[in-house]
Length: 264
Image (cartoon, rainbow, N blue to C red):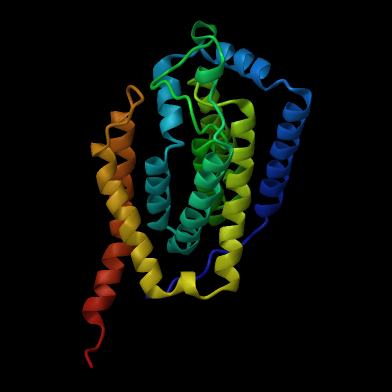
């Protein structure tokens, strides 16, 4: 089995510019000490939309949705599998390491409970950076690098809306979302760069391992008890689509090549 490597095309420039803008915004929020004020304003404005909308948007930033998305695209572009594994490794270190190091309190642990709107579980710890925001921007960045540049703006807008949903559901500060989102873009870019310059992520065995992990996660997704309301249908749809398309575009061709390979 052999797949071409995913390349850093013209999409990388606007994506990296977006990451720098997000980091600049994070710096302004931090220096101006407006994190709480902006959170309250955005959370209140977002509450005009139904809770079910924001619950499903925040599920699109969940790790399970992210791996299903990558598996779905792998059915069209198997080249996305190698950087997907690198992204999962580095991303876990970035998000979980940051949460453990800073151990920042979430809005529910700082603000008066009735002062803002919460959808889903009430979370209090490990706020910085936002893991959901990281997942949304990192996974969609890989997708944007794998497909036509004409999809860049709508997909980037969708990913940012998914990240913003973490403020809408009352789970994260704007600073968490901005840094998580910027980190997602940069680490996704770095993952593709690593796969261009190093051989190990592109080995057939590693690619098969990655596809297996993503497929198992997709199988599990519809049965996952998500804490946010009204997300079951979306979970089932993305999982089924990912499994069907990956079977058509990746697994069946792999099995056919194995079956027709000459025996020694």
